[in-house]
Image (cartoon, rainbow, N blue to C red; front, side, top):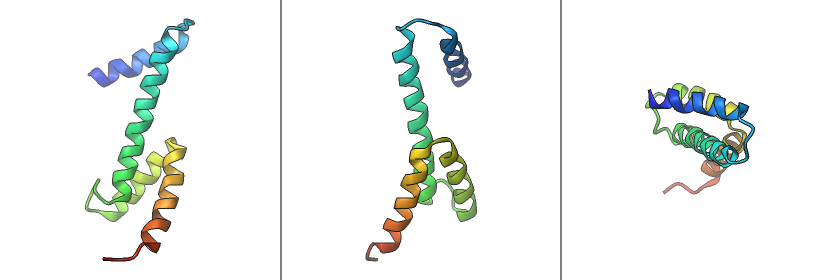
Length: 86
């Protein structure tokens, strides 16, 4: 229920034309983007699910909403393939 209140609060903050609301809105947006990145990170490291296809689908879906995660996923795949195995 708290998450729903946050979403509606963010939507209401868009229509409030006050400079005090902007930092709060930006902090909330940053938190949401960070959460999306962490979930896509977990999918990339197969810690979201034991099913590799589910990890790929969820990770790619989340990366669609967070372009930084998409570039990170591409670099991470290259890093994992080129890293020496122990």
